[in-house]
Length: 259
Image (cartoon, rainbow, N blue to C red):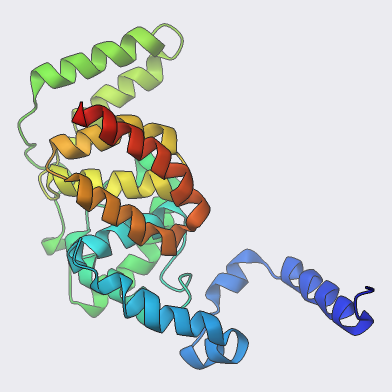
């Protein structure tokens, strides 16, 4: 059966128009719910019935934890609050978790400095709306949490033995910046840092790193059901393919830990 000429022409025109729109200009367009209903009524129904009416109300994670997971995914994918598809769905995580998220733990080192800097632009406006000034933000150089010297020595040795000869700079910064500084900042609990990190890794498709970070998260107090629920939540924000890539890795970690 030959495709209808008019539909084919429209599809090609729409594709050309999409490719011609600069990415930043497209991101600056924030659709209202009416806009979504005019273009994709099924998307609006799924947003209202499933995302806001179901997912955000599931009992497996607190609303604060869901906000943290969502923020980590948005920052990790370099998407601001307009990129989720519904003003209601986007505004909630920024406003609920923004006051607790001034540390932006994984943004620079787990998602890249550019993503962290892009997040600053939106977060600045949210902080201004909530009257959060510099005096209420984490100190740049706070007193750090105690370090588990034995666990850190074991981690450093394993990474050093594997990569130290060829990548000494990365190995050194991993120790000095990541595990002996960033992970010890007191303004987010280690459990929350793990939740952020796991979410950012899945958002970026870096599922191989979950073999190390899921056990760290569970050692820091995350439970297997909480991690599973975070992955469920992420399906709606980072897409089913990223989640289905993450699940076999997480499943293997869970099974190995249970043995």
